Amino acid sequence: MPWFRQKSGNGQQIGMGFHHTGISVVNLQRSGSRLPQLVSCSFHEADGEVARGQQLAQLARKLKLKKTPVVVALEPDYYTLLQIEAPEVEPEELRLAVRWRIKDLIDFHIDDAVLDIFALPQTRRAGAPQTMFVVAVRKSIIQSIADQFHEADLNLCAIDITELSLRNLLSWYENTESGGVQALLYLAPDYGIIEIAQESTLYLNRRIEIGARDFQEQGGYGLDELMDSLILELQRSLDYHESEFGKGPVSALSIIGPEEHRDQLIEYASQNLAAHVEPMMVGRQIEGLGAVSPEQLNICVPALGAAMRPGV
Image 1 (cartoon, one colour):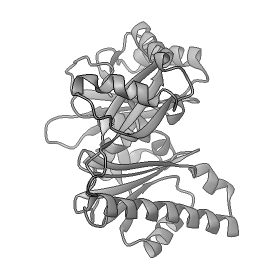
Image 2 (cartoon, one colour):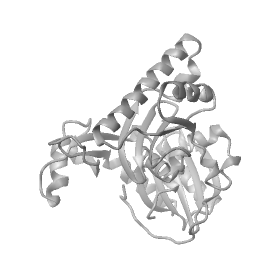
Image 3 (cartoon, helix red, strand yellow):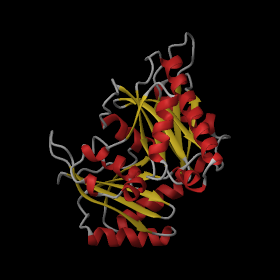
């Protein structure tokens, strides 16, 4: 969602993940056809809006980021993501029609909302309507971020959402068994996201109420139940994609999650799903990322996807 677009050309790109507990930062050096190189990957605690602004100013000085383009990835609590039937109107009337359609679906007044939209591929079902995703964010959130970047003298290029940051990762990642269409399971501390994409085309996105913290809190029979629930969510997503878009079965599923129980989850998913299942080994395609601890990398995933955003 390019709410901001400024150009800079030092070959580096910063991704920042805005979490309620702080800011994750990934700095990549990108040069032509070479593998991206990791410059830094870190998380900085910042509890609240004032602390976030102070942390941004410190980061700008400490990491010398003032001319480097920055893409922000918002945590899901910052926005509302809706899937709706696309209004049948002229292109110039689309945004107004979308605002009218979602005004009763968000928990704040539509006049206080900044919207962005992106279409989904057409289903293969005859006569089925075109659908689209709509992102709604409070204007005050966008303005606050813009003001803080201005005060820190940082080059804000775009504000994205976690789902599109994950799409960036998935479209760039080369799963060994993908065959083009890939699925991703991302387990953040308090939520999970399932995505299916082919290159830059996002076919499916689902947010689920199972996160990494659930695995850390469960054991024994409770863990088995949790894994069964997660496999059911994955199977439903894979089945929906196959029936809705006619692209055939998804052959590969990559998993991003905490180290604890990850191998057990991959083994269980491999036994119960037709797709090839493997951890997303992003370290093999970004030089230097392999040195980052799994815990650090997991919290920085949205920032990493933001740093991989094309066209900045």
